[in-house]
Length: 228
Ligand code: SF4
Image 1: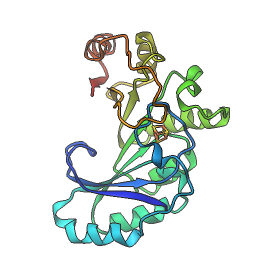
Image 2 (image 1 turned 90 degrees about the horizontal axis):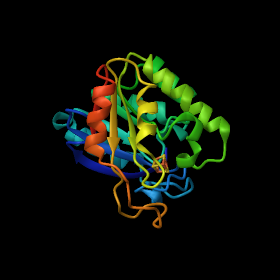
Image 3 (image 1 turned 45 degrees about the vertical axis):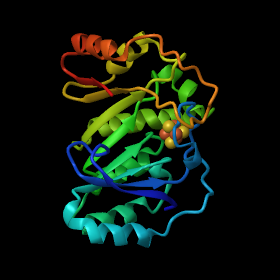
Image 4 (image 1 turned 180 degrees about the vertical axis):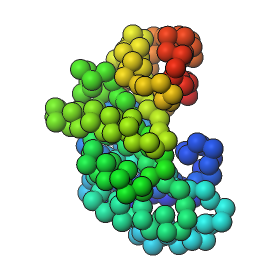
């Protein structure tokens, strides 16, 4: 694991839980809206794992769990070993993933190492790489496979789409919501305009996000749709 950072306390990164957030280094995607572009290179130096575990041991009684996010955590082969150590402390684990590593996600599910999965659904499958920007069809197929694995995992989960202004159109969200099965959670997130990977990206969304979420709830009453 290359650990890029530790947020000691968060009330928003794990639904209804008090958690710490571990940021991992490295990602294969190049999303224009990425608001942690410093986490994209895979080679950067990391923080000692001991720093994370010293904190978790100290705060174990006050925390419900740990959210592992990135970058893309599943790039790290020793992610399962890292999670086993967290679980040994009696803490829950939420994993944020872009879905590019179905083998890793499957093994985490099978070993019951994750209690909550949050996967980005970047775009419709046909246009996925317009956001992920990998120039690699296999990676996109992998995301599709992970999506299916999560849907049938039995693990609490959510899918979320961050809006890329000037690219996503309202009708795309109806197609993406159509991929979900009854009872699943679908969150539409606004881009945070901070230090984005592509600072020149458009800022014009072109539609009202809350209104879109309302229309999606009407069209897909079997889903739990929210705008964030
Ligand atoms: S927003 Fe895109 S580039 Fe940034 S970490 Fe997530 S998947 Fe990677």
